Amino acid sequence: MANQSSAWSTQQSTTQVGGRARGRGSAWRRTLAVLGAGLLALLPLAPSALAAQTLSITTSYPSVTVAPGSKVSMDLTIRTTDPAQVGLAVSGTPTGWTATLHGGGFIVNSVQTDVQPAQANTTPQGPAATARLDVTVPASAASAASRLSVTATTGGLTAVLALEIKIEANAAGELTLTTDVPDRRGPSGVNYTFNLNLTNDTSEDLTFAAEGTGPTGWQVDATLAGQAQAASAVVKAGSTSGITVTVKPAATVQAGPYTVDVKVSAGSRSVSTKLNIEITGSFTATLTTPDEVLSNRGTAGGTIDQQLVVRNSGTAELKNVTLNFTAPTGWKVTFEPTAIDSVAANGSATVVAKVVPDPDAIAGDYVVTFRAVNDQITASQDIRMTIETSPLWGIVGIALIVAVGAGLWWVFQRYGRR
Image (tube, rainbow, N blue to C red; front, side):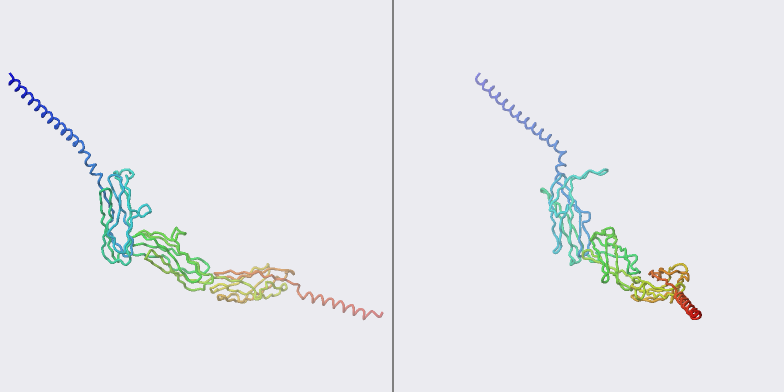
């Protein structure tokens, strides 16, 4: 009986141990099932987790060819999956070259990527930022290919943009300065305007300034078209800009050909042209009398000789000068000579005007206007003419008085003794 009880007890204990073992196995299976379900749930999120780690830096033109002494500008685009601060650094810059990163008007060492504003009919863009790399190539740079790189870093990620700049002496292109009318002709008393065009056939945008130089005493103004107060302007690569040159000759300039130089400078480059002006001289004249006395006198019906002087106070010769007049009705005027063939610059010529007043003109003052005229000038002068009583009437009066006195003397002599 005791043995049976012991056997039963042993069997019961074995059953309990086996039950506990089977319970622990079920618990492990349930735990593995939960972990598997969790992993299955996380699988759709795996691409997003991986995408959050991307970083890129690009430029549209990573390889360019320029001339020695050029400045190269490259626009950079930095992209991340999520907004992030990205550090930037340039390496591999050749000796003597300078390379700087710019953004927002500053020299920058890092950028902040951000989501770009949505635009109609476009695919939404991820976070991005932009910067500009400026590389200055020295004028002494030899013809060769130089490689440098821009490195972007954020978190544990790094992206490298490889760049190549080739130097070729004939890659500079040309600046040309042209004008449709390079020659002008006229008197010294006017301003001359020239319209020039500056063409930038180089591979880069250039900031230029213009200046003009003329003979001593001349005023030359070179202004940028539409920007009268601007000292310089930018001409984009492959485009043209206008320049207006205004020239004011010196007031005392003599007739003859003159040259004005116009020079346009853009960094180490310059181009110039010559503008030609032929001064025909200034045309100025006065009409006066030899002694500057502007009055004369005579009698009605008589001839009054009036000398006139044509003075050429300009810088050009006066040719074919004729004279005319305006006088009271009934007056006649003739000139000796009738015309002047030539009056040299700073010279003079004399003409005699023979004025015959109306025979019926009463005593008094009259005005006669004289004029000297040619294609360039008109000079005039008023002369006062005083008409006096004719001496004949005085003689007649004296004769009458003498006759009356003689008659009285004869009468007294003949009849006085009676």
